Image (cartoon, one colour):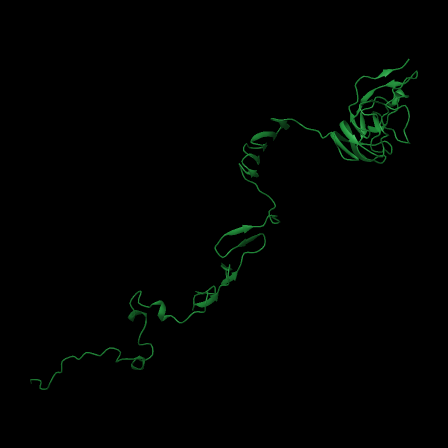
Length: 294
Protein backbone atom coordinates (compact mmCIF):
# COMPACT_ATOMS: atom_id res chain seq x y z
CA UNK A 1 0.00 0.00 0.00
CA UNK A 2 1.49 3.35 -0.89
CA UNK A 3 2.36 5.73 1.95
CA UNK A 4 0.42 8.87 2.09
CA UNK A 5 1.33 12.11 3.92
CA UNK A 6 3.75 15.06 3.83
CA UNK A 7 7.46 14.98 4.64
CA UNK A 8 8.83 18.28 5.91
CA UNK A 9 12.31 19.41 4.87
CA UNK A 10 14.95 19.63 7.65
CA UNK A 11 15.01 22.91 9.49
CA UNK A 12 18.08 24.80 10.78
CA UNK A 13 18.46 25.53 14.51
CA UNK A 14 19.30 29.18 15.08
CA UNK A 15 22.50 30.19 16.87
CA UNK A 16 22.28 30.19 20.67
CA UNK A 17 18.67 28.90 20.49
CA UNK A 18 19.69 25.81 22.49
CA UNK A 19 20.98 26.45 26.02
CA UNK A 20 21.97 24.26 28.98
CA UNK A 21 18.30 23.75 29.90
CA UNK A 22 17.87 21.71 26.71
CA UNK A 23 20.48 19.11 27.76
CA UNK A 24 19.91 16.32 30.21
CA UNK A 25 22.63 15.45 32.71
CA UNK A 26 25.67 13.66 31.25
CA UNK A 27 24.41 14.10 27.67
CA UNK A 28 27.68 15.95 26.84
CA UNK A 29 30.93 14.11 27.64
CA UNK A 30 34.56 14.39 26.48
CA UNK A 31 33.72 12.57 23.26
CA UNK A 32 31.55 15.51 22.22
CA UNK A 33 34.35 18.09 22.78
CA UNK A 34 36.97 18.35 20.06
CA UNK A 35 40.63 18.42 21.06
CA UNK A 36 42.05 21.84 21.95
CA UNK A 37 38.61 23.45 21.97
CA UNK A 38 38.37 24.43 25.66
CA UNK A 39 39.99 27.86 25.91
CA UNK A 40 41.71 29.34 28.96
CA UNK A 41 38.83 31.77 29.23
CA UNK A 42 36.41 28.87 29.78
CA UNK A 43 38.26 27.70 32.90
CA UNK A 44 37.10 29.21 36.17
CA UNK A 45 38.97 32.26 37.42
CA UNK A 46 42.17 31.49 39.35
CA UNK A 47 43.51 33.66 42.16
CA UNK A 48 46.35 36.03 41.31
CA UNK A 49 49.86 34.52 41.14
CA UNK A 50 48.51 30.97 41.40
CA UNK A 51 48.99 27.79 39.41
CA UNK A 52 46.77 24.74 38.94
CA UNK A 53 48.27 21.48 40.17
CA UNK A 54 47.16 18.09 41.40
CA UNK A 55 48.12 18.42 45.06
CA UNK A 56 47.96 14.73 45.99
CA UNK A 57 49.68 11.41 45.27
CA UNK A 58 46.66 10.13 43.37
CA UNK A 59 44.71 11.23 40.31
CA UNK A 60 41.88 13.70 40.77
CA UNK A 61 40.85 17.29 40.38
CA UNK A 62 43.19 20.26 40.16
CA UNK A 63 43.63 22.84 42.87
CA UNK A 64 45.08 26.33 42.81
CA UNK A 65 48.35 26.97 44.68
CA UNK A 66 49.40 30.56 45.33
CA UNK A 67 53.01 31.57 44.74
CA UNK A 68 54.53 34.47 46.66
CA UNK A 69 57.65 36.22 45.38
CA UNK A 70 60.68 33.86 45.13
CA UNK A 71 58.48 30.80 45.86
CA UNK A 72 59.16 27.55 44.01
CA UNK A 73 57.12 24.34 43.68
CA UNK A 74 58.59 21.30 45.44
CA UNK A 75 57.23 17.79 45.12
CA UNK A 76 57.19 15.94 48.43
CA UNK A 77 55.74 12.59 47.35
CA UNK A 78 52.28 13.30 48.73
CA UNK A 79 51.60 16.45 46.78
CA UNK A 80 53.44 19.73 46.39
CA UNK A 81 54.97 22.27 48.75
CA UNK A 82 55.31 25.95 47.99
CA UNK A 83 58.44 27.41 49.60
CA UNK A 84 61.47 29.65 49.05
CA UNK A 85 65.11 28.61 49.11
CA UNK A 86 66.59 29.16 52.56
CA UNK A 87 69.65 28.40 54.65
CA UNK A 88 72.98 28.84 52.87
CA UNK A 89 71.30 29.56 49.51
CA UNK A 90 68.67 32.14 48.52
CA UNK A 91 67.04 32.92 45.20
CA UNK A 92 65.86 36.27 43.83
CA UNK A 93 62.64 36.59 41.86
CA UNK A 94 64.65 36.67 38.62
CA UNK A 95 65.97 33.15 39.32
CA UNK A 96 69.46 34.19 40.42
CA UNK A 97 70.74 31.96 43.26
CA UNK A 98 73.10 33.42 45.87
CA UNK A 99 75.23 31.30 48.22
CA UNK A 100 76.06 32.56 51.71
CA UNK A 101 79.68 33.70 52.13
CA UNK A 102 80.14 31.36 55.11
CA UNK A 103 79.00 27.86 54.18
CA UNK A 104 78.01 25.78 57.21
CA UNK A 105 76.62 22.65 55.54
CA UNK A 106 79.60 21.60 53.40
CA UNK A 107 81.55 18.87 55.19
CA UNK A 108 83.79 17.73 52.34
CA UNK A 109 84.72 18.44 48.73
CA UNK A 110 86.12 15.34 47.11
CA UNK A 111 86.73 15.48 43.38
CA UNK A 112 89.60 15.20 40.95
CA UNK A 113 91.21 18.40 39.64
CA UNK A 114 89.52 20.69 42.19
CA UNK A 115 90.82 24.29 42.22
CA UNK A 116 90.19 26.66 45.15
CA UNK A 117 91.43 30.25 45.23
CA UNK A 118 90.78 33.94 44.68
CA UNK A 119 91.73 33.71 40.98
CA UNK A 120 93.83 31.64 38.56
CA UNK A 121 97.03 33.17 39.93
CA UNK A 122 96.47 32.49 43.64
CA UNK A 123 94.99 29.08 44.30
CA UNK A 124 95.20 25.58 45.70
CA UNK A 125 95.22 23.16 42.80
CA UNK A 126 94.68 19.40 43.07
CA UNK A 127 95.88 19.00 39.50
CA UNK A 128 97.86 15.80 40.12
CA UNK A 129 96.54 12.75 41.91
CA UNK A 130 97.64 12.54 45.57
CA UNK A 131 99.28 15.98 45.44
CA UNK A 132 98.39 19.53 46.55
CA UNK A 133 99.89 22.49 44.66
CA UNK A 134 99.85 26.00 46.13
CA UNK A 135 100.16 28.99 43.78
CA UNK A 136 100.77 32.66 44.60
CA UNK A 137 101.34 35.53 42.18
CA UNK A 138 100.91 33.18 39.21
CA UNK A 139 103.68 30.76 40.27
CA UNK A 140 103.68 27.47 42.10
CA UNK A 141 105.34 28.00 45.50
CA UNK A 142 104.71 24.84 47.49
CA UNK A 143 103.82 21.25 46.69
CA UNK A 144 102.75 18.51 49.08
CA UNK A 145 103.27 14.99 47.80
CA UNK A 146 104.11 11.54 49.16
CA UNK A 147 107.58 12.74 50.21
CA UNK A 148 106.25 15.66 52.27
CA UNK A 149 106.43 19.43 51.77
CA UNK A 150 108.44 20.62 48.73
CA UNK A 151 109.37 24.25 48.06
CA UNK A 152 109.03 24.66 44.29
CA UNK A 153 109.88 28.38 44.09
CA UNK A 154 110.48 31.41 46.27
CA UNK A 155 111.91 31.46 49.79
CA UNK A 156 110.98 30.50 53.31
CA UNK A 157 110.80 33.84 55.13
CA UNK A 158 111.06 33.88 58.92
CA UNK A 159 109.80 36.97 60.69
CA UNK A 160 112.68 38.58 62.58
CA UNK A 161 110.44 41.22 64.18
CA UNK A 162 108.36 38.89 66.33
CA UNK A 163 105.91 40.20 68.89
CA UNK A 164 106.48 39.84 72.62
CA UNK A 165 106.50 36.26 73.92
CA UNK A 166 106.54 34.88 70.38
CA UNK A 167 108.98 32.62 68.52
CA UNK A 168 109.51 32.50 64.77
CA UNK A 169 111.57 29.74 63.21
CA UNK A 170 112.03 25.99 63.49
CA UNK A 171 110.30 24.55 66.54
CA UNK A 172 109.75 21.01 67.77
CA UNK A 173 107.83 19.36 70.59
CA UNK A 174 109.74 17.77 73.48
CA UNK A 175 109.03 16.83 77.08
CA UNK A 176 110.46 19.09 79.78
CA UNK A 177 112.43 17.48 82.61
CA UNK A 178 111.72 20.44 84.91
CA UNK A 179 109.68 23.63 84.93
CA UNK A 180 110.94 25.89 82.16
CA UNK A 181 110.27 29.53 81.30
CA UNK A 182 110.18 30.90 77.77
CA UNK A 183 113.69 31.85 76.65
CA UNK A 184 115.56 29.39 78.87
CA UNK A 185 118.18 27.30 77.08
CA UNK A 186 118.22 23.53 77.46
CA UNK A 187 120.13 20.36 76.73
CA UNK A 188 118.68 16.97 75.79
CA UNK A 189 119.19 14.36 78.49
CA UNK A 190 119.62 10.94 76.88
CA UNK A 191 118.74 9.10 80.10
CA UNK A 192 115.09 10.20 80.07
CA UNK A 193 114.72 11.87 76.64
CA UNK A 194 113.69 15.16 78.27
CA UNK A 195 114.85 18.77 78.05
CA UNK A 196 116.72 20.20 81.07
CA UNK A 197 118.40 23.54 81.79
CA UNK A 198 121.86 23.83 80.25
CA UNK A 199 124.61 25.48 82.32
CA UNK A 200 128.09 26.33 80.98
CA UNK A 201 129.80 25.30 84.22
CA UNK A 202 128.77 21.62 84.07
CA UNK A 203 129.79 19.29 81.26
CA UNK A 204 126.83 17.02 81.90
CA UNK A 205 124.39 19.80 80.99
CA UNK A 206 126.00 20.78 77.71
CA UNK A 207 125.67 21.43 74.81
CA UNK A 208 122.68 23.73 74.40
CA UNK A 209 120.37 22.26 71.75
CA UNK A 210 117.20 24.33 72.07
CA UNK A 211 115.37 27.17 73.81
CA UNK A 212 111.94 26.97 75.44
CA UNK A 213 109.52 28.70 73.04
CA UNK A 214 106.87 28.91 75.76
CA UNK A 215 106.51 28.17 79.45
CA UNK A 216 106.29 24.43 80.04
CA UNK A 217 105.83 22.41 83.22
CA UNK A 218 107.97 19.46 84.29
CA UNK A 219 107.05 16.21 82.50
CA UNK A 220 104.77 18.08 80.09
CA UNK A 221 105.23 18.38 76.33
CA UNK A 222 106.06 21.83 75.02
CA UNK A 223 107.49 23.67 72.04
CA UNK A 224 111.22 24.32 71.80
CA UNK A 225 112.97 26.67 69.37
CA UNK A 226 115.75 24.87 67.48
CA UNK A 227 116.67 27.86 65.34
CA UNK A 228 115.08 31.24 64.79
CA UNK A 229 113.93 34.40 66.53
CA UNK A 230 112.34 34.92 69.93
CA UNK A 231 111.19 38.04 71.75
CA UNK A 232 110.55 38.17 75.48
CA UNK A 233 110.44 41.50 77.25
CA UNK A 234 110.12 39.80 80.61
CA UNK A 235 112.61 36.92 80.55
CA UNK A 236 115.45 38.54 78.63
CA UNK A 237 117.70 41.19 80.15
CA UNK A 238 118.41 44.31 78.09
CA UNK A 239 120.85 42.78 75.62
CA UNK A 240 123.40 44.84 73.70
CA UNK A 241 122.21 44.97 70.10
CA UNK A 242 124.46 42.91 67.84
CA UNK A 243 126.31 41.30 70.75
CA UNK A 244 126.99 37.56 70.74
CA UNK A 245 125.09 35.23 73.04
CA UNK A 246 126.54 32.32 75.00
CA UNK A 247 125.43 29.44 77.15
CA UNK A 248 124.91 30.88 80.66
CA UNK A 249 127.20 30.23 83.59
CA UNK A 250 124.33 31.00 85.94
CA UNK A 251 120.72 32.09 85.85
CA UNK A 252 119.77 35.72 85.29
CA UNK A 253 116.93 36.79 87.60
CA UNK A 254 116.23 33.09 88.27
CA UNK A 255 115.95 32.32 84.56
CA UNK A 256 118.40 30.28 82.51
CA UNK A 257 118.59 32.61 79.50
CA UNK A 258 121.62 33.28 77.26
CA UNK A 259 124.22 35.75 78.49
CA UNK A 260 126.52 38.09 76.58
CA UNK A 261 129.54 37.58 78.79
CA UNK A 262 131.63 34.74 77.46
CA UNK A 263 132.44 32.12 80.15
CA UNK A 264 136.15 32.35 81.06
CA UNK A 265 136.72 30.26 84.18
CA UNK A 266 138.62 26.99 84.14
CA UNK A 267 136.23 24.14 83.44
CA UNK A 268 133.61 26.39 81.82
CA UNK A 269 132.23 25.53 78.42
CA UNK A 270 131.89 28.16 75.71
CA UNK A 271 129.15 27.72 73.13
CA UNK A 272 127.95 30.48 70.81
CA UNK A 273 124.15 30.67 70.70
CA UNK A 274 123.53 33.55 68.29
CA UNK A 275 123.19 37.32 68.70
CA UNK A 276 120.87 40.03 69.95
CA UNK A 277 118.72 41.64 67.26
CA UNK A 278 117.28 44.16 69.71
CA UNK A 279 117.42 44.50 73.47
CA UNK A 280 114.68 41.86 73.75
CA UNK A 281 114.81 39.94 70.47
CA UNK A 282 117.47 37.33 69.83
CA UNK A 283 118.45 35.20 66.88
CA UNK A 284 119.00 31.75 68.32
CA UNK A 285 121.32 29.36 66.50
CA UNK A 286 123.28 27.10 68.85
CA UNK A 287 126.76 26.40 67.50
CA UNK A 288 128.05 22.87 66.99
CA UNK A 289 131.40 23.72 68.60
CA UNK A 290 131.78 23.69 72.38
CA UNK A 291 135.15 24.78 73.85
CA UNK A 292 136.22 23.95 77.41
CA UNK A 293 138.27 26.62 79.23
CA UNK A 294 141.41 25.14 80.74
